[in-house]
Amino acid sequence: MKPSGCPDGIVPARLFQEVLPVVAPHVLNIINSSLVSGIIPSVFKHAVLQPLLKKSGLDPTDLGNFRPISKLPFLSKVMEKAVNQVMPHLDNFGVLDKFQSGFRQYHSTESAHIRVFNDSTLATDSDSHVALVMLDLSAAFDTVDHDILLFHLENLVGIKGSALDWFSSYFDNRSIRVRMDDCSSPSAALPWGVPQGSILGPLLFSISILPLGLIFRKFNISFHLFADDCQIYVPLKTFTSIQPLLDCLSEVKDWLSANVLLLNDFKTEFIVFTPNGSSSSAPDFSALPFKISQTIVNLGIKMDVALKMDPHVNQMVKSCFYQLRRLSKLKPILNRRHLETTIHAFITSRFDYSNAILFGISKPASSRLQLIQNATARFLTNTGRRQHITPILARLHWLPVHYRIPFKMLMFVLKALNGIAPPYISELLTPYNLYLAALARGQKACLQFNDAAF
Image 1 (cartoon, helix red, strand yellow):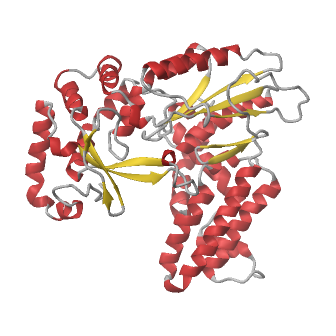
Image 2 (cartoon, helix red, strand yellow):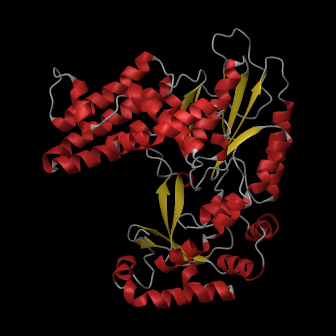
Image 3 (cartoon, one colour):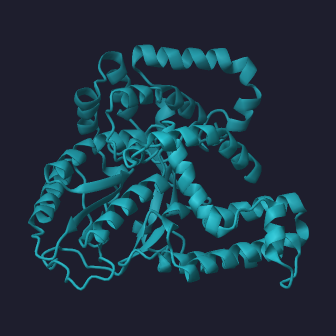
């Protein structure tokens, strides 16, 4: 675990790690005693809140733009890590929703993007319009009702007895204080919400909104969740009624209200993906209470109505060149190894983020992405513009863009065929016997190439 803890913690995290061989038996006894008795020490339930801006560039004078991150004592996070063994139970019995990708093994924002993008593309290729609604839940983690969550833990998850008592103790008598710079507030009781920054917080929130999936399925509405980010999408022909979508949204609002959650209509985004080359008009969406957009940001990816991804490519090019200019100021004080690590952290991570959905983008867009990689490679190796870039990329073991994107897609295929991808990705594949035999022969070589390249 990372040595992060609470400023009010009794033992600093780094000191705890240094003396671990001595104190480990006592820590084990504390954790086991808590699990058996169903009681958590009160000192483990106090958090220091550090408000952080949700996105860079937001107005810091608007308190709604901050996300309250809970800094908990390091020992309490160790205990939560032990309790997180409930995950195999949830996976084995399929308790969590299949389309919930937040904080789950083998799931990621990229796998969520692939599924939503795949479904939308297939629909538009069938001459249908696709309405995508990005539902915004106001302060979702901070408004979870503990009694309702305990009811879900018992009746939907099957947690009973001392295990349920432990979760009841986990919610009982929690306290917080807010700290910003050198200023701090007095401690206050926290009778609701799951702590952001804890080990169990994301899992508990996913359990609290499990019934939402039943509502979407009732109206035959496709959906995907990533923690509290909820997107629903439905393909519609020109004269198809949107009444099922309206009825679904109405029932979702009623359920959220009954469960002390709130749908923020003002921040909810709505976009309609249009079929390529089709002259058919879109259905009438005027009854929806949301303003239609030409582009939306979906888990960090900018999507446009034509699904050509040009706005996302433009944003990525702008962001990467900005980071490259900033790194040029650090270059004189960094050695080659540290500079390359910094480049991967600030540029390659942006360059590769969810690039699987860029499969099939236009040549001009692909060329712009290649410019980023070329400029970064020249920057790292001190190579002039006149020198051919291909040998440089080969020495660095950097795949060019026109190979990098298909390689990412093939890695997802390989993971799906070997059971290390989300089920909603695996079910998209229709394997053929000859293809599987060839893939089985090529798996070892592919993995060896992956290790050599990255």
